[in-house]
Image (cartoon, rainbow, N blue to C red):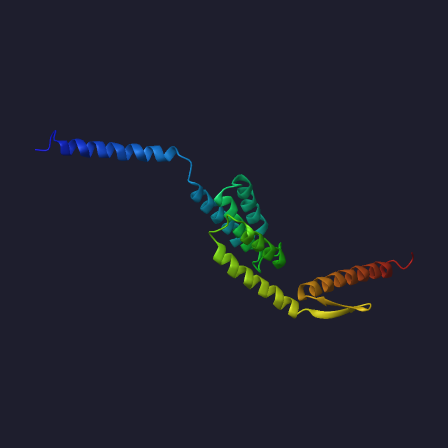
Length: 178
């Protein structure tokens, strides 16, 4: 019979150690890698909702709290990734390229180095293509290259001014006695 045999004692001790270790883990703070993964996951949720500014705030807050750590260094990669996302309307592609350059120049940044190098080359190619598509515009004696985004912004501004002038004319015609 196994009643009070050494086998039973070992089984009981093993069970107690398993339960005891499990309880000890519950009170411990999460490992830095787990926190890092959680922060990146939270930022990704914001990105899925189209909130790039909110995602950047989450990442920036973590970078400040984890300054000097491996995770704090690596979070700058994710900030740069979201800056070069073409769907991000709050950051310019050139800012993202600059952020990738900073990440790649950081001595401790190792985890995403190959991805950052490829992403930087792709973002730089996008910038080059945008510049190639820029239309020349003559301003005085100078020829200035205007990107499509700049041209659209200028046209929107001109349209807003024209609409304001039209409204002013309508009001004046409605009250001819003035």
